[in-house]
Image (cartoon, rainbow, N blue to C red; front, side):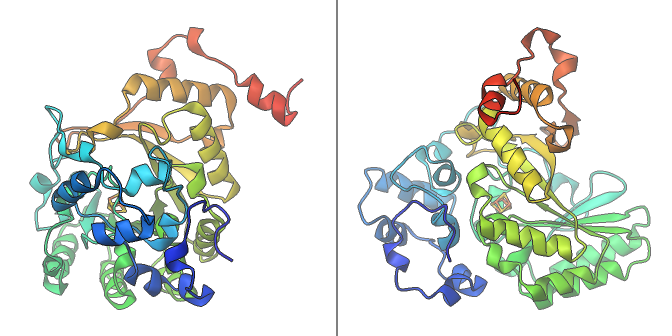
Length: 369
Ligand code: SF4
């Protein structure tokens, strides 16, 4: 059974067997990566075709058939489509938006390893993702040569970590680490785990959302060996919480790997209280811990996604007023220039006057009155 959420015509994949559809290699090999493929799958030529071509030259795109199946392609405001279709707005930069807003490249003692906070570092082990999120703060890396991310490159990171005794946690990131073959990923995790001062490993991956069939039993048993290992993913909209995504998260949890979520506040996707509430309730239902809600970085090519902080604060106020604390992420702003994250707390900035309850919603559910 395919996800019940899809509303688009899947005619291009009508003949695909269930076995293939649920095979991550099939999903990966059949990603939509060119405008020609995109037009074919849309079965009509969009008016914005030339703009898409131009944008795709600066920022390539890639969409798994699974993620594609979650959207209503005819709706330009569809929250899934907004996150993965090229958009001419990506080429319109605001002053102040830059390719590397967190200045990660500055804080790399060896290529690909960001060491900013003393006790932890981020290892960018690939630049490949199953689906490229248009709001990504590392979109500057999408066009780099894959050959950069070879074993020599990974070995330099391991050497640095092994010589830097005060690092106790490594965040394995990308790109998406789960687009790598299991052998290479395991070699990297095993090498890190063999370093005596490393306590914790963390993986940042959007795979449970965009290609959940990649979370196989084999992957879970491999990851399990390197615990304590934490898994951070990125659901941004309730529609992304599909049965397949829920199953992927469940498998990780069953393997003893805690799963947390880091959403990004995205204009037009989730920048309203109702959507955020439903997303957080959905995450709680699948036992994924809401961890961060990020203010969208000042990354070049994502200006159109950035909601203002005031509206983020308003959403957080209303969440605090209405929903269980277990569902509430920390709203944070990563200060441009790599100066670190600061939490944004509603009650410390605004007086009680703007606290609103969500009685309409709870009335409908019969939970109050
Ligand atoms: S999966 Fe992560 S690294 Fe890849 S495009 Fe999306 S946000 Fe960026």
